[in-house]
Length: 349
Image (cartoon, rainbow, N blue to C red; front, side):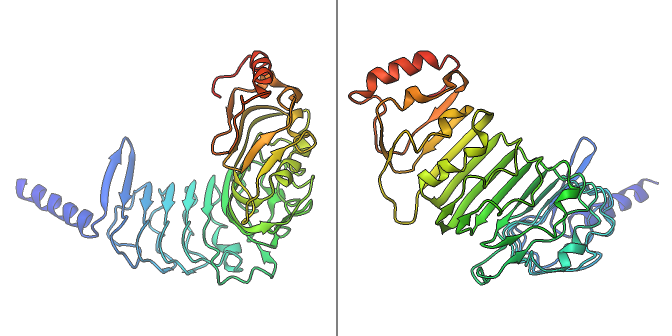
């Protein structure tokens, strides 16, 4: 009897570690960490009841059908930083319980029709990350049709690249009623027009633009109008004139927002920026808790600008670092002292 037990334990041990993945248990969750193993395929011999699988930092180029078919308990699947180019249409069949899927930093052609089928079985998916899959070989001059996401009724977070000419009208966003956060990175836009994002759902409360490498020459005032519930607007590393970035705030005048973050906002050939009253007219009429205007070549601001803020009591965190001016220099000192008395909820400045 004892010998049989030892034999069973030996078999289990060999099965568990033959694939070199690290298997850990957290409460009732079994996690398989298969990162950095130079894998070229999804490993076999994994426990069938794993709830988490991380295949990041390997050399996988193709995901074949039935690669995950045995893992019906899987809730989180990560395949970041591989060389995935090809993926079968039914590869996620049987993974109805997956809530987290990340495939960023690969070489997937997200505009391929195959992705209309790929995501369909993931009916409980809440988080989808497919960023950093558009590379330099993609013809940015042509419209890029995004895949159909309409079957993902529980999706709350969507992270993806933003092409120069994005087409969302076939993506079924009208069927996604819980989507609240969208992150664009990388971003290849060269204009932020009123109709660029009009097909995205009005439920979005947070939108992020990171690493917009193309020079954005046009920024229209109703670019963000499709998102009346927006609370977080974050732009970082975007090649746009700061004045045009301020213009995008128009739909939120006299509204409350959690944060407005403009960091490293400057064209590829940066120029010094002096803030005038008319440039910040929309910003000063927003009740915002966290305001970041950092690393954006600001060299000064017009006298009285700080006193123009309509809702100074809303400010809790203000960050102006990485610019080239002193907020309390010369005639601005008295103005600063006055506004500090008005910002009664300020915690960080």
